[in-house]
Image (cartoon, rainbow, N blue to C red; front, side, top):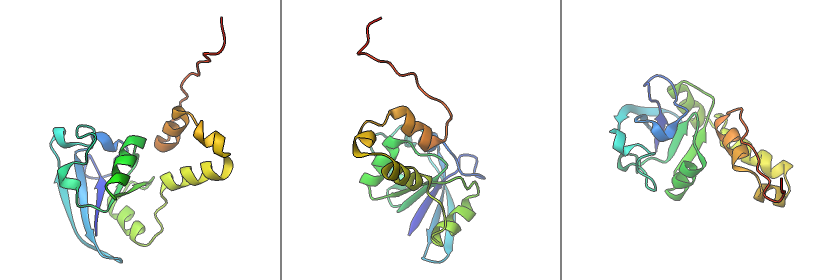
Length: 152
């Protein structure tokens, strides 16, 4: 199995995966890391610049670990059968080991499970993009709401 970890500075896990050009590629079995190599993509092959595809060099991975993954990229990864994991862990090796042990907390799963538990079907359907962006990236901002039904 191959796991990619977004690491722009080659030391820590990157939170902006779309712009990331450096990925640690781990070859693993169910219990341990077998090998690790650095993949350096040219700017034009980043996720941001290959929409709606996946960078060719990352086509053979089964999982992507990052500090943040936007909704569009998450959907692209799903379409290619790639598991997307958003973690608060900053150390790539530790994140992979913890993933193999099934203890790496996927913030994406927490977000969607919480929304499904606490919101009704209609609430989920009408959830605002600002709420999803805030959850997926951990940003503490809110976009203004415009009420088109009121006259001023």
